[in-house]
Length: 277
Image 1: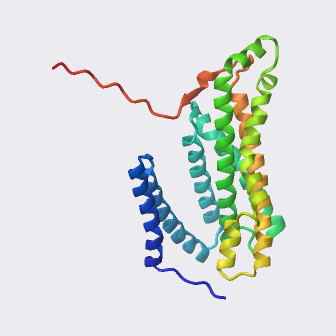
Image 2: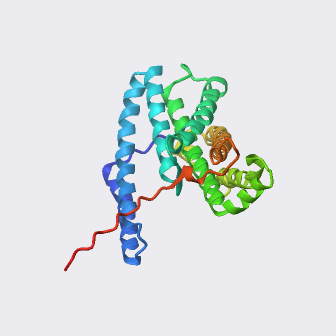
Image 3: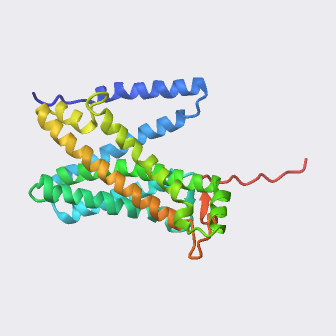
């Protein structure tokens, strides 16, 4: 079975559904109409651009180009982790903590999969390396965002209890141990749910794409199982690393809780100057 090509009219019909949803949002005053339209426009532009980039990359396979695109993807994912936080770490930690955790987990798991499991020729073949890394980064980004957000919100809300435990002589790691474990669990829950529902409630994206492209169903299933395990491992390791580093950042060398290292992610509006009538 050959792949059925889509034209601009087909994509336009699908876009109308998003426009209708945005209109419904305006009617119901949900407040997400603009966000839907902006996200739809970003999706279209970004995917078209990455399609052109991948087309050029597939024609000129080189490790330097693949590495460059992978780093751009990593930096963009790091920014998304930062902007999704209600409370962010100040300074370079606000951006670097999530980026470093994704680099350690997603890059390591992707390289392992390419060199030991899939073994394409060359091992950095972009048609394998970029999709695998993209799926790992996307899911790891969500896990790290959820874990860090829970960690900082819980530390802020329970700061009196944490400081009381510190005053009783506990080290920082024990004073925040319960919050840290809960934050790690929250970051991993989406992937646990995804694995539990795969094949029964939903057909995951990679498997669906391969089947639509004409691949044998059992071969698509094997690749999807591989991808689900890789994503789960990458998300889990990344969440553990990010939450652990984030928890340590909340305390100084003298085991004091330092919530002054957090700042709200929302920009404060400047008060308007009163004008005399």
